[in-house]
Image (cartoon, rainbow, N blue to C red; front, side, top):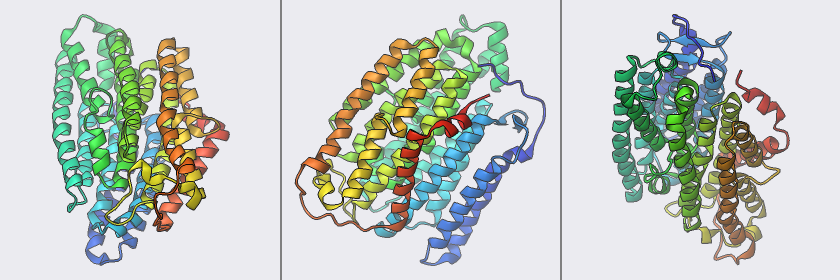
Length: 479
């Protein structure tokens, strides 16, 4: 893909999503001082802020447009990702509404952190400069460190936050050092200028630049939980509050993949012989380790954590294929993943109660006999994650794998299809418990309205994008 040559201009209208959401985040913090015990108003203000942010993403026309002296871009990729970020954040807030009330979590700064994290994700997806990429990653990471440990009375949550913080700081060091080496070898942190340097000077014999690229892969690989940089994911997913787990498995992952795609597919595709094999190895390892690790889990949040690792492997295929079609496949995949993941976590929240979240897979025994609609919904989400037609997950994988096939990565696609087949073992294990096991006890389900709303949205999105994907696929097409 040819990088877009940036004009020398600053356009603050292009920053509208970041500015709007930042104002709402500050407003939520101030509003919390007067809201008292009723936090519903804070939730609605947060949702309005996300809606206004999604609308403001389309404020700039024509595109591409630039801000911060060519360090920030508004283009098709950033606009679509901004919509995904606002959707995932809105679903996380809706899930959190009932969950926080049940678990007695103080919520004022909680919602503000989700909004600020979304600001970081937008910055990360729109960055065309390594300094801006680093800034976006740090905004996202700091918010997630706090959110992961928000259940302050829960030692497991505190442990998750500490592990995430320590390993995240360690990975950030690799990322920053990689950026330093890239700057030292090219003389710029701007992605357009780096692309121009690679085109004109060549980079295959530049060991400093090659080492910088390797360190960038390590740093970004941690953010997307790709193997072998995935060690934090199972413990952090298990220990974090369940809405936070759903949020961090979708929004921040999508933002990191946006940065991955910009740096590798758009900026340095000419260096593909140097990094292609390394990323292929990371993708294959992520698929196998994620799926085989998920098979051995008895805790459903840990199972979905390993599943998320395998999905990181599939999504890396879009970066490796480095084409416009692959970029469109990445966008569509992340959208479908948003619906299925939040829907599945919504059901997990419904089946829990205060102080006891019922996260063991055996706790789902006989769910189909007691609550058949919830069992059917969970089955739809799990089969979609596995990639079974006619659900959205199948279309997403087909679209992504087709893009890779067109670029000649046949072996990689065969491995991905094999891993998709392996994944059905642990997805169907949950289905077997729901339909073929006797109930272990009564299901004490509180039919929380906001959580049910998220599940309904997830079902509609998963089925609609599986049966009628054409209109959304047309929107994902990168010019």
